[in-house]
Amino acid sequence: MRIKKFAAAIGLGVSAVALSACAESISTTVSRYQAMPAPQGQTFFVVPVGGMANNGGLEFQRYAGIVAQQLQARGYAPATDARSANMIVQFGYGIDRGQVRYVSSPGFPASRPWGAFGDPFYSPFYSPRFGFGFGYGYRWGWDDPFWYGGRDIDSYVEYRSQIDLHIRQAGTNAPLFDGRAQARSETNRMDIVVPALVDAMFTGFPGRSGETVRITIPPRQQPRG
Image (cartoon, rainbow, N blue to C red):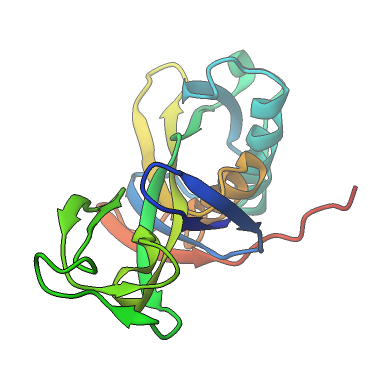
């Protein structure tokens, strides 16, 4: 989701905000350590641990179901409860509140250059990125900080998301798998980022122990309605 802001004169604040949303691929970084046994009918049960999964509600059940599908596709079988499982799968996920990022891009031709210091066209400006200052640039209707130097400043919110997956041997609690998948995206929709991170975690699963890989996941088709 990209947010484009056009700022007015100092003290007038933001004059307009344009929003646009589009499907995007999710670029992830996945770290894995594993001692997974070859699938021979072992059973598993997914439990919540950490982050937003701790409440164990309907949202967790949905994402735990995606994890279970991935494990089933690799030859492991779901158990009806934790007591009857050979392996306990601990799954957690979360996303932060986002951080505004700024990108400079060429703007329209400037109407008039500012003059030298003492000249009325040498003016103070303010930018959320750079703070207050004085400088040469171009005047486009007003001292718009997002149009200084004849360049447009495009801003967007970047969100950081993460899932953690730990598989333990039931009874002994011996570690079989420890994985973490992280991503930066312009969407904070959990129904988009969490399934993408799970897909990344299970790409090439269980992988080589100690590896960190970058995996790009294409957007999933979202249900209508």
